Image 1 (cartoon, rainbow, N blue to C red):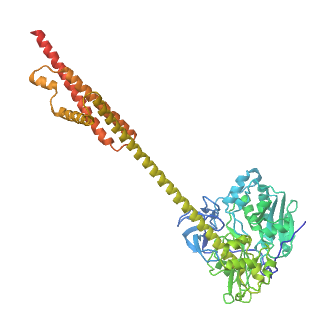
Image 2 (image 1 turned 45 degrees about the vertical axis):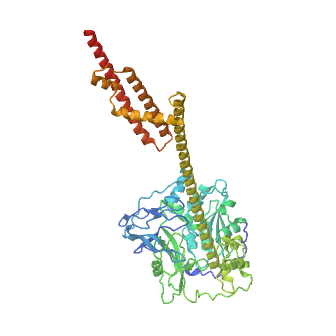
Image 3 (image 1 turned 90 degrees about the vertical axis):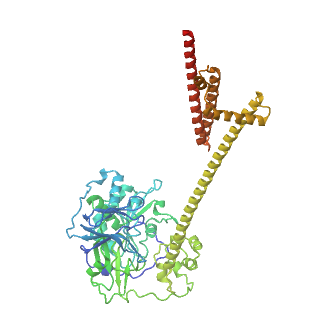
Length: 605
């Protein structure tokens, strides 16, 4: 098998043998389990239970309903004691929302749905099982496994890699997993290979793990899975470095392994996949290395997710009088642990209880002497010295231009620096500031978009308002023009000799109409004085009233169509004219009746 090398790298003391002298032990059930709602990259899960609920082992207690993430399960049966903020594993010592579970000691499983032959199912169904089991990467940042197992269609995975290098000093969780659970490791890889259909499957293991290599070689017999024994060099367990060793290909800057047809998973993740599909069990436990000279029985423990770290330290025989510093993770990429109440999560792999001699405090930072050792050991071939200057001077744009985000924060540069400069801390600070600036820029862009949308809406409303005003003005002008036309018509008919006379005639007509309301009609007068009614005059009066009513109704309909301001006024005018027409009709009818009576009387005589 051809192997390649990657640039740089170092050989720190391994300190692994201390924790591999005894088999993996069960950590048991603690008095209390603390289950953070966010144990991986992506969105935090939403709680599905309430305080006081009794839950079963493996029961889903929180889930991500939208976005990137996986569910959280109860690690054992018990009662939900609280849903509150508790300290969680983080370099800042921050607190986050957690579900606090008090075990009842029964360790009663919920109903499981194992699959005897997953190949009879659709691949999407198996991916759904892996997702519902809450599996996220157990060797790195905790990226949801199902997301990685769904590469873009234009990026066919040709090589599937299981990372068993475990290059960081002290950590032996993967080593012991491969020794004792080799069959499950291989079975999980078979499931992932069935989903991805790669042309090559390979497991990379450093040559300082002979027992694990032997166990894995026995497990892969009669399969096409390759076991690649690689030289021990830190950080050969880095995803990009292992890919380069096994394939000779480099992941492009800013890219992901799928860009070159490669996918990499951790051996612990493979075991979790096997258990999820073949046994129906969700991810509720993991192997954690407890080591360091301040514990009497260093070793690896199968710990339930949510187990407080102090429980594992106590089981390993913590010696408080010798303890100087605790580290979560390895000495190269881990961070100082200040609170032992934090829980084990899906990405927890090691806790180091070190004495003062074992991990002494770092020396004071001195000025850079430009020795270039940091550049020589950088596995990503970056320029650590320049990145340091730009990060320290807050010239983040220049640092980003030098591929700051390609830094894997392996700590090799800090390890060899003779000036004791904590280079990785500067890079982490710069990355954090750049991310904050991007987030602020995104918020600013969204605020600007909302403001521009509001301004456009206000302008649109103002334009619509102005349009309605113009339409009302046009309607008023047309009404005035009609009045003027009526006046001119009156002049033309000779009823008035000039414009003033025409207006006076219109006023006179209005006065006559008003007077008609109170003055008895000809029919009424005829009835009162027993005089012969003037039918012709009554008919003319009715025709004038109907003509006026029609005119007013036309003006009302036009005003309504144009949403004019005088609609109410016109409605009142139409109602009055309607009453006037009814009175005129009644008067004409009465007059005609009277005429008929008079005619009958004359005939009788």
